Image (cartoon, rainbow, N blue to C red; front, side):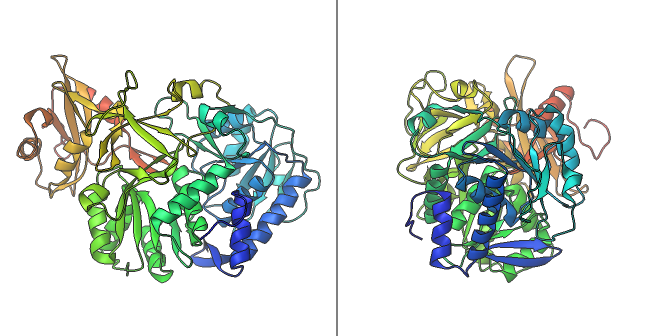
Length: 564
């Protein structure tokens, strides 16, 4: 699809409507039924919401918090906000009071959009409790969503007014004149004349309080078009929107789909069996997600839900649990689909790096890739002195270009910590230059130094996961009695009766790995401690390190009730 007007979200939507007004652009799921929204209908809803927001006083530079499920309404709010020069901060419906309060104080949204009802969650109750930290209080827009239940606006009033979004009746609502909290980064200062901020995402928060990383409208559109080209998105395709668009992976996937002319299947609640059925019936062509999400589809399909997957053409997988290769092989064998590992983050957009279809599977099924457009510069440097490293050397992955975070909301110190002295963004990820691209290794905080060698724990995890009786494996580092770092492994068996023990797993590793990579201890546990975020479910390595310390000097097997 060719961009024909100015490179903004408003221009992208205008192009879509002009080229084919009756073509589906989004599909909502409500009570098991699919409700299709055309491009012209999306445009009308955006215009109506834009008018309502303008009427209550939303102005250029202000922030709107979109606290909604994966409904087409989330797309409507993004386009309407951008049309006014305002920006959106997405709020995951699973966030707790503290997380929502952090967003309210850092982003200072003038309006918060909440669902009238959703999945039995008391979303407004969480907002009400979190709003004690807000100054001034935001107005509340109540969004009926595809089910369109009856709702009374006054029941959602925090004190600054509330209205039913899309009703046209904003009586008594006046948004506060909240200031922009954007603190510009070196990337944002270089792009000072390229438009307003459009969207912000919460970072993972693995190194402290989550930051709110904001990007310009023009950067969103530019990156969406670059992604759509490499993903091979075309008119008539269907993109599975199962990751929340409040998070960077769900957002980037949806925007790439729209840029390429596809429709987005909005899945507000992930049910693997129901999703597989819709993949078949709606002929889904593209899916992006972590191997936790794909793993649930994989397991459900192999448990007997043998739906037809042949519509699938392209899968982008982030490896969180070490299952990506098995999933890629399944997609290839059952659907003929191409799979690529991906790399992205809140600060450089999701899908910033992708592998090419020309890359062999041994490369393409791993995290990382090549920049999705030539203006994105990438380098691997020594994290101590920012010296650029050569092919095969491992160091920090750094970025410069139009995809790099333009501002942090409410955090004046974030840019100084996140950027090198010469203006490159520090990703905090370990990588190496490999076969013309960049191979993601791990978070720099996760890398192990074993007997003087830097070791990616995933290498050990993948060997453990190859064992027929291991379902999931995770490796962390622990300082041993001699002062050296030791690898400590945690494994979840395929079932409680699996023939599996620590000595045999060490032998299994020793057969393929160097001696210093063999885990010093292997603990058999019933399930991994995990945390769920906007981009997928991740294993809590911090908690595993605590367990490793607590169980130091022994090897635990939960099936035996006592240390093995």
